[in-house]
Length: 87
Image (cartoon, helix red, strand yellow):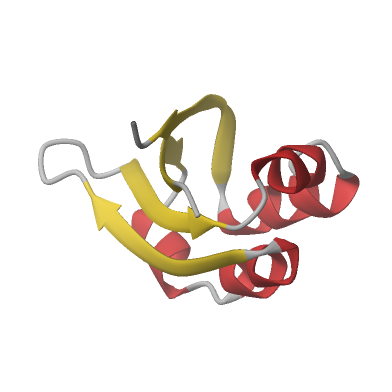
């Protein structure tokens, strides 16, 4: 099961941290052990580390309206998103 790191900017880090939506939408597509991070130097820069059972399934999900809606609700700025896979 690969571990990935996702970094992106958000409109409001406190709102993003408090939101249950990421867990609600990611767990059903095989994501587990989601950990959140914030940048102490840039209050709107955040990240996740998570274990992914099926990267293809996750990447397909990220192209759906459900993923776009979840990111919008959490205040994610999708154009800033960077995904790294543990190697």
